[in-house]
Image 1 (cartoon, rainbow, N blue to C red):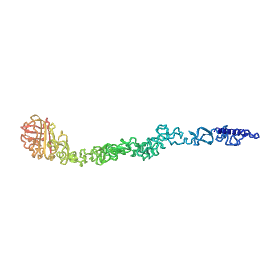
Image 2 (image 1 turned 60 degrees about the horizontal axis):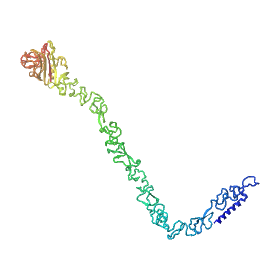
Image 3 (image 1 turned 180 degrees about the vertical axis):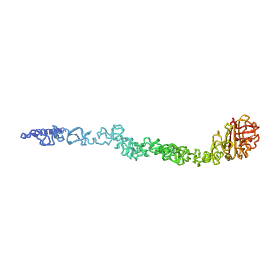
Length: 619
């Protein structure tokens, strides 16, 4: 071996000596060349003065050194860095002795590229040999142990142990997932390893496995994952990492579905509204966003009162101060108002409190200028209405369908004159005392009517007032009217006897008062009555049944007086005997008499200084 190295060294030296004698590597310019360009015979870019072999283009300062026995890169060394190490292989088993190395370009004969032969004299011993005989003490595989050795003290000799440096590896060991062949079956980390984890089929590829399909393996098999938490391995959108959405699936595998899952994404849900009154319309203030509408919820928020089933957009607007149909307008302000719920009012054009039927309008509330009654027969005249008093004007003032009806206006004026006060009272039972129009013998006059005394219906036909003079009152005995008919009882007047007797249909009544009596001061107030068959005669004694007169009040003075029958006229008692009452209503000319002859007293007359008055009524 040493002789071979010396030989190689001599060869390299000789090669270098030859190169040194080659004038072409001197880099000297040809004296006859006037271009002054350096010589580069091999055209490798290195001038002859720098190229150690200017005839070989593979040799030059920039060439790579190769193992060929030459100085390829012109650095003065041969094959530096390119030599290989070989080991003397005395037994020819392909493994050399680490103590006998040599560097060369190629393995010399008797050398091997692999060392580590622990016995280079025995070809059966080398690192690649097998130790199969646990009875042979020789270390055939040069691992430092023999079949008798148990370096890891696991109870198995090295020749039977697949790894005598690890106690966890031997033929009876349990296979574990640790990168070793623990059970020495030549297979590492097989699926039956005792600590092999479970993996679960991930059919949908979402990274989560199906607990119903497990396998054990040290390494994750293709199509399997470590998590067994997929609740639907046929749907990649369903797994613990998925977002719960509204689709009736347990998307995130937490056991809760849709609204039951607090983490649900409600963007796919719907907003519904509470319908507390069950009318099909919801409350905008009670909205719920959910996958499924809660019981009693509806999809609309159109109810304006969710506590009243009669209030909703489908309801009819009626008169109740509510917005029944939820359109923002109430009662009369709503054009869709159901008028059957409204009240009828009537325009009161003349503002008399009564409307005309022709002005009917249907509304919830009474409009200004309208009333609830329709009985005005003339809504252009405020004096005409059911509350008006019927006037004698040819019109139906009180709107009862009749104009100038007797029970309302009889006796009011000449156009509606009556034949007597009794007729007026019969037609108008509530007629008060007063002046009325009465027609007698074709002549209409204003007549005073007593509608209250003794049943009422009395017509005043004569009013005699003593003027305080003995001259008398002209006309009292003539039978003609004295003064004019008037409602002023302080005036003297008298109808003709014919008119008086015409008016009388039932009876006469005469009354008188005075403040002086023939026997001294007294107050006389007497009323006497005669039947209608008594004929009134102002110039003489009345005739007929005049003797039947009677009185209804007593006298305050009954002193004696002379028989009046010879000088008192008018309504008197027919017998003219003393003690019989009489009422004189006229006299021959000097006074009026009203009194009674009783026990010789003259209770009442109208001489000078006295103040008598006599009224004659009939009916």
